[in-house]
Amino acid sequence: MPPTAIQPSSADQDRLTPAPGSGHTVDDTEEHTDMDWRHRALCRDEDPELFFPIGTTGPAVTQIEQAKAVCHRCPVVQSCLEWALTSGQDSGVWGGLSEDERRALKRRTQRARVRT
Image (cartoon, rainbow, N blue to C red; front, side, top):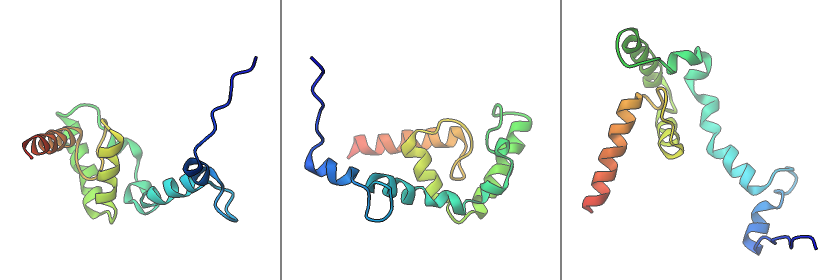
């Protein structure tokens, strides 16, 4: 006997139905819209390796500073940082912050939540 298929709820079905004339589901469209900031990011024109230094000392310090300089000129730096924090990006420079700086920011945010 074949397993019974699980049917999506009506709310899920609405979300999974292609948006009129688009060929994409509402979830696809929302995700694409949420990620549109990437198309305006200045890092798109840079060598990706710049944003993923190996280590945190020596030449890596200069590389991190160079990557952060690109971020500081970028019009979508805040969106980038928010995405990196919510998606758990542990490596590289995102939103103008290094790996260590993002970890420290997460710790401060978590401590502030505990206090409230």
